[in-house]
Length: 557
Image (tube, rainbow, N blue to C red):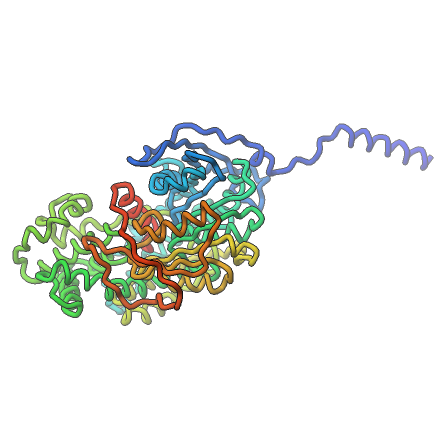
């Protein structure tokens, strides 16, 4: 009887097995979808090529894709105009920069490369899929915003508490959103590899700026077998801590301010600031003092000189400097000719001609912190374990005396100090087998990603190529700075499979100048310096891209 029962059970089990469906792969709904290209939600910039867009679905959590919760990721494509080699995915950084319009604009600035590569833009998870959808926003209640005169140099307990009020509120607002734990580099890198597969590509080629260098390096670290050529421009230390790039802002800002910006001011506005950098710094302090003396937050004055990574940033800072210095000196009339180059910036940023701008208007036009971009903080604070608020306050105490432009304020304003969620995944460093695929490009005086960060990453990843750009002050070098040496190095790597080891490109002249004024900086390695070439002429498209790169990678969020 027992033998007959066993036989009957085996027959039933075989029958059930024969009709039961095989266990479904939870990734099938994502890897099996079709990419359908169509019109884009944005208007291509003038001078950019034709572009098409698509939406793809990704799992909210790649660690548990069967949860059934999806996110939409927006893509753009500017198709190769000639014999196609593959795709080049682009990212402008941030964290939180949208790649769809950016990639299309870069295609207009790099037509040689777009001749052989489809330029692919991707709006990383959390950034929204259109200008109308702003993506993950952290809503800070108005009552949580600090009130009164904010001056980070005031080290009283009351001032410290007021400064820490906003970063605490931002961290709590961002972490209260259920999406926050899933807006990380680890998750976005998996989205990127899904896009690679959906586009039918064995290898993903990549060009990223600023935080985008971290994103690209982590893709190569997690998916080395699928990594093609990788260009990392204006680099963080992607072998170390992402937050260290933000923590270095006060030092690299001050360096650019002291050794490049103040001398530039003395060459262009000596009647306002003085004829030497020392006189200009005294004038700057006097202009700052006007704010405090007239019940205007000095922090608002300082903010104009933080992250001047584009010509627009320089002009905006100069406008604030000139107007405030004029007010501090008794409001004497400024020569209208000296304001001519600042008038367009004043109208665009403050709504009045430069001659009508006042420190009061500058303060009134400060940023609105009731809604802040959540992707910026979820990634920067969520990728790795954060430091404490007390650690950041001690950093402020150390950096303030050395770097007064932003050193006092930064350590008191970092939301990562109040971030309580621990990282859910670990991010590996770059494996040796892909080092030969990677080229780093870095400006010497970049005030938004320090040269030392890029150099540290390269030293920790033997075999990576490194193009240093001597005396270069802006954020973003390839295709945006008009530097023929840089563009040539990157183009040869992407098009001809020839990658430099370690070279130095000369910089191009600063805004409103036709010669390079050399400055002392960290580019001291005994490697070959390329011959200087005539810079490419400025274009509206290049100016707009350069502005976007600097703005989207601001430490201020």
